[in-house]
Amino acid sequence: MSERPSQVIRVLAAMTLREMVRKRLFTVGALLTLGFLAVYGLGLHYAREDLLGGAAGTAADPRWNTARLVVGSQLMAVGLYLGGMLAAFVAALAGAGALQGEVESGILQVVAARPVRRAAILAGKFAAHALVLGAYAFLVFAAVTLLTHWVMGVPLPSFLAAGATFALIPITVSAAAFFVSARLSTLPAGALLVILIGSAMVGGMLEQIGAVAGSDALRSVGLYTSLAMPSDSLYRRVAALLLGDTAGQGPLGLLTQVGPLGAAAVPSMWVVAYALVYVCALGLVTALHMERRDL
Amino acid sequence: MAVADAAVVATGLTKRYGRRIGCEAVDLVVPRGAVFGLLGPNGAGKSTLVRTLVGLLRPDAGEALVLGRPPQDPASRRHVGYLPELFRYPDWLTAREVLVYHGRLAGLAVAEASHQAAHLLERVGLAGRADTRVGTFSKGMQQRLGLACALVGDPQLVFLDEPTSALDPLGRRDVRGLIRELRGRGVTVFLNSHLLGEVEEVCDVVAVMRGGRIAAAGPLEDLVAPSAEVELVLEDPEGRAGEVIAGCGRLIPAPELAPGAGPRLPAEPAAAGRVHLRVRLDPAVSRAELVARLVQAGVGVDSVVPVRRDLEDVFVALAGEDGRTA
Image (cartoon, rainbow over all chains, first blue to last red; front, side, top):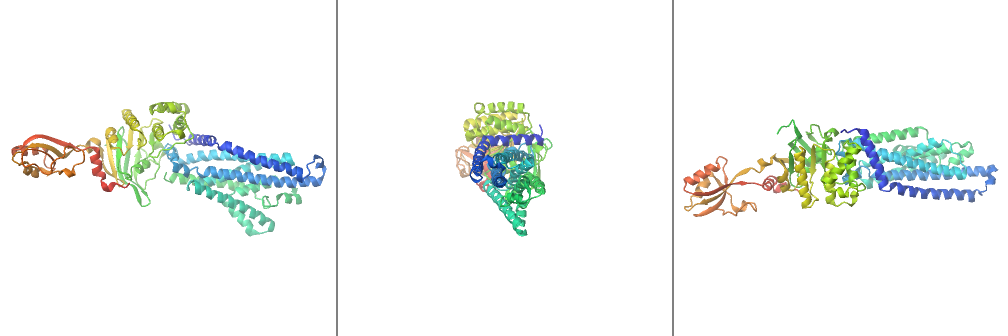
C-alpha cells in the first residue's frame, strides 16, 4: 500500500463527482439552466420579432442588419453576464462548505486519518469542482452564444478562446471558495464569497463607466476588485473577444460594447494569465494551510 | 516495555488549545500486539491524545512515533485504522461504497477493496445492509460501519475512540469479541473508553489520564494487583487484636470502603469474639508477619484475604474528584 498522491486525487475527484450526482446537483443545475436558457431564447425570439420586425426579407436592409447586430450583441452580453454570474454563484455555494463544513461534520477527519496528504485531498476535491463547473460554464456559454448566433445572426469570432476564458470564471471562484472554506464555516464563507463576487461585478461596471467617462479613479476601482476576484474581468475579456470584432473598430463596434455589461475598457490577455496565477496561488496557500492546521 | 519495537511511543507529547491544555507531557509506550486501554474522566485529554497520534492534531511539544514514524508523516498511517469518537460518514454513500472508498484511500486496488468491504460488512453484522445508504442507518449501525472502516486495509494498529458508545449490550459484546480477535492476529488495539468493565475485560495494558497527563500506566495486572490491604476474620476473645494491628498498620473504617467492597466491617475490633476487619499494612510488614504476630498474641486467625482492587478502584483513586471536568 502506498500514499500515492495521483491515486488519492483520482479517488477524491471521483468521489466528489459522485457526491454531486447523488445530491442531484447536476439535475437541479441542469433544470435551472434550461429554464434560464428558455427565458433567454424567448427574449431573443421576441426581440427579433417585435423590435426588428422579424421578416427575413429585410436582411438585405443595412439598417436592419445594424440593428440586428447591436440588439443581438447587447442581448448576448446580458445572457453571458447572467450565465457567468450563475456559474460563479454555483461555484461559491458548492465550494463554501467543501472544507470547513466537512471538518465540522467530522467527515474529513476520517479521510485525513488515511495515509494521504491533505494537499492531495484538497487537489482531488478541487479538480472535481473545477472540471464540473468549468464544463458547466462552457456549456452555458455555448448555449447562449449559439442561440444568439442562430436567432440574431451575431457572428462568433474567437468562439473557443472566449469559451475557455468563460470556463475560467467559476474555476477562479472555486479557488477562492476553497481558500475561504479552509478558514470559515459554510455560512460565513458563502456570505463572504457572495460579497466578493458582488464587489467584482460592481467594480467591473464602474470600470466600464470610468472608461467611457475617462475617469482613472473609477478604472482603479475596477482594477482593485478584479485583483481580489477576477471573475468580472474574465467576463469582460470574453465580451471583448466576442464583440470586439462584431463590426470592426468603427462606430458600430463602440455601440456593441458600451453599457455596464460591455467591454469599453478592454482587459488584455494578461487577465487570463492573472486568473491562472490566482487559482494556483490560492490553491497553494490553501494546501499549506490545510497541511498545517488541526482537524 | 521495549520502546524500539513499540507500536506507539510518545515522549513529552503536548497539545494545547490556546490556554487550555489538551494533553501535556505525555510519555507512553504501547507494545506491539497489545490491547491498550486509555482511561480518564471527561476532558482528561484522551481524544486529544488519540487525534494527535493519528496526525489530525499537530503537537505543540514533544514527539511521537506510530509504527516507527512520526504521526505527521502520512506513511505512519499506512497500517493504521481509526474509529473517531464523533464518527460520520457521507450519508449519500452506501455502506459498501464507504468501505471501498476507504480501501482505495488506503492504497488498495478496486477488487481488493471490494473483497475486503464484503468481508468486513459480514464481520460487523451489516452484510444485509451493504447496499443501503448510510443516511438511513441508526447511530449504532453507523458505529458498526465505523468499526469496519477502521479495519479496512488490514491495519497493524487500530485506534478505537469510544467504539461502543452507540451500541446496545449485544453490540458491545460483539466489539469485545472483535478486539480479542484482533489481538489473536497480533494487531495492536488502542482502546479509548469510559467503560471500565470493557477495558478490564479486554486490555493487557492500561493508562489513566488526568488533567491531560498520564496519571498511571502499566500492565493491567500490575494496576489491579493485590494491594497492601487485607481482610481478616479473627477469633479474639481477649481483645488483643487491636494492639497487634496498631503495630502493623491501620484499620480501614467502614466509611472508607467502596460500596460492594465486601462485608461492611466494624470500625473497631470487637472487644472479644469473632471479628471481621480490613487492615492496611505498613510497607515493612508482610501478611505472613501480621499473621505471626496475631498468633503470637493468642489471636485465632480464621482467614486472611488480600484485597484485590478492581479497575474502578484504581480509576477513582487516580482520577479523583478533581479530575472531573465534565
